[in-house]
Length: 420
Image (cartoon, rainbow, N blue to C red; front, side, top):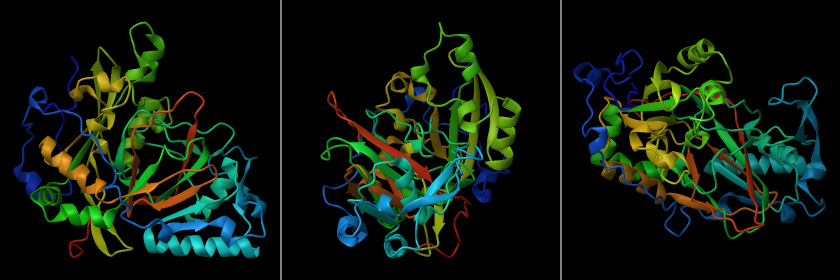
């Protein structure tokens, strides 16, 4: 019998839960029950129509800065062995910082990033993923394999960067990368490989200081501080789908546990989840999806931001079933069968009004990032969140954005004396 991800049959051991006072008194409860929950879609707006942060503050026009070179590619050279391909042969590109242009670009990018948590390069003249990644690496320094993540991400062919992993028609709610595990990424970069219509396909970046200020002093914000969060993920078994093509529908799958944890061995996947990602794991049989790997992670809704010396939001409704409100295939599932669920840390179910308030705070903090081929954006994963609205392309139109994940860091959680 398939158990809902919001079922009280889950184990409720508290060893992973940092909110010990409330956890000792709490018992698992789900009010309302899944069939009573108001699961109507929540449609993000992403901004107010005016950028929360003026683009002139975080954008660098490479053509104006470096008139003596045709492209940033002109200062790209062969670097160390590629940290993504790991074939012992392929070398990554890097910016030659021994040139005046390379040294200046690195200095400017890092100064803007340090100040605002976001830097965007315009008019770079670059056309290849590897050259664009070289520019991103001036901030990120290194990049990682995408392991233990919820999103289904493949590498861009013939490159060492990832696809964004989401269908264009989906709303991508504001989110922080890998907020649902013990380790996250310090920063990340997006590169525009192609965009045939610069008037559509924008990304949006939310300023976390603003979003936190809008939530922290509210009743909902106080609940987030006190209770924390429980992230629930359901990862189906790819082997079951491969062996039962006539009775399975891959369009309803967000990600398989094999792809998420980069292994075909369920014991190894569970070991990675419990020892490296600090997740609780339960295997659940389903007549629809085969065997699920269901994970739970209890943590704070906030994270300490060393740049601004304060605790800031590090969570959003992107990790709830609303992530799939416009996701073809998955959106047709009942909300309690969708792959993601986000509850308070004592297992209380959030109301739709609370989740809407949360989404609105990020929308009020948003800045639009238009894309032209060759553009590069690098952002701090703690100081900013990112997302984008649904994109509809006409025949012949292309919008292709790649992503580079920076180095892994262990989440610190909140510091008791850093609330504002």
